[in-house]
Amino acid sequence: MRILGIDPGLNTTGYGVIDASAGALRLVEAGVVRGTRGASLAQRVGEIHEGVADAIAALKPDAVAIEELYSHYERVKTSILMGHARGVIVLAAVQADLPVHHYAATQVKRILTGAGRAPKDQVQLAIARELGLSAPPDPPDVADALAIAMTHWFLGCQRAAGSGQVY
Image 1: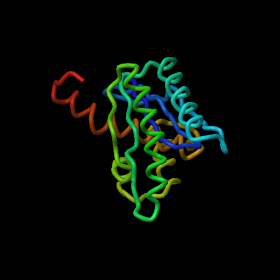
Image 2 (image 1 turned 180 degrees about the vertical axis):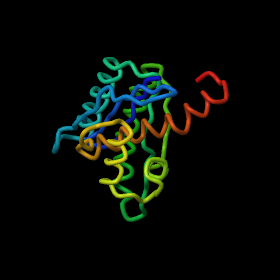
Image 3 (image 1 turned 30 degrees about the vertical axis):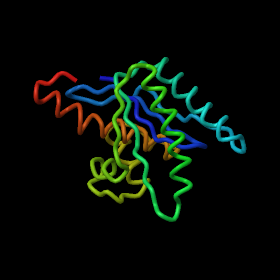
């Protein structure tokens, strides 16, 4: 199964694609889609949509896994703005007829490191170890996207594969 993980952001959206099978995970490609700093919200979300749609078309994933929004009462506006980024990412996946799965950041960290509040560098090291990389993925947005893809495999796909269900 090929999984596209996405860490949404208005300035930097990380993406990572893994091929997953019963025995191993393999990195296919990872990178970032950038919205132009200082550009209008409409232009930035358009750039994010286009970049994610291009990645989907080129890499042909079977599923998309995306980080859920975390909302803090002191940063309501940030959550609303991030909702725009998530919306166009989900739109790109739906337009490609792909299933979309959502995971909380604390859940992703717990699955990969054992601690829901693990620091970014610990997540990066866990990703490098799991994928056999010589160095941790950088920037952290890429590591987070790969972590989300891997969480989908560990939680959703392996469980379905073990139960005989068709995913």
